[in-house]
Length: 197
Image (cartoon, rainbow, N blue to C red; front, side):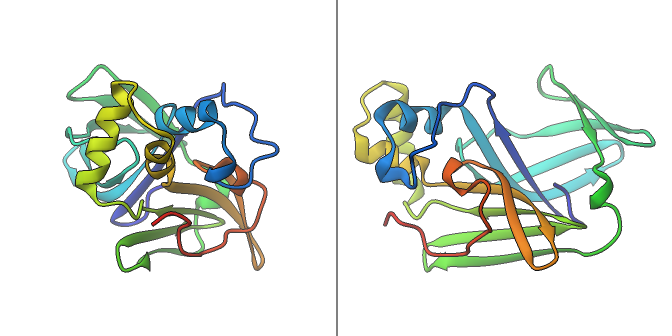
């Protein structure tokens, strides 16, 4: 999703495990936690344009990516063709009809003194992001342990505790359609403090 200055992006792999009987991170199996930590991505931040180049400055990133994200953009009647500048990437972004016109805004807030939140609204859609409450230095150490297959269950729960949810606004209901936390899908968006400190 793109508003005037901010972007939010959510990517979830098709082969996601079944989370039907799971309602929170503590109820996840080891396999489910490992999948949540490694097989999906959410990021958000400021968007900068320079000619036909677009720079996505990631202020929040579930995978802690720090490399620049730059794409060359070519617009057509229905969307945008993106070609990677620093990598071999091609993506086509199609404009969703209910995103055109109507309300557009971004609100930055916090779920706790250490946990930023971000809400983007465009037309009938929203993206909500809640950062992890864990300090960035600790997260980097956890990520290293995950990469080395040395992470304990507490590590996995802390690393997976990042929410990026996409949904649709229908009257006063904000329904989550896709989320990095699968148990949020199909439910109204709830803005609450994180479960893990």
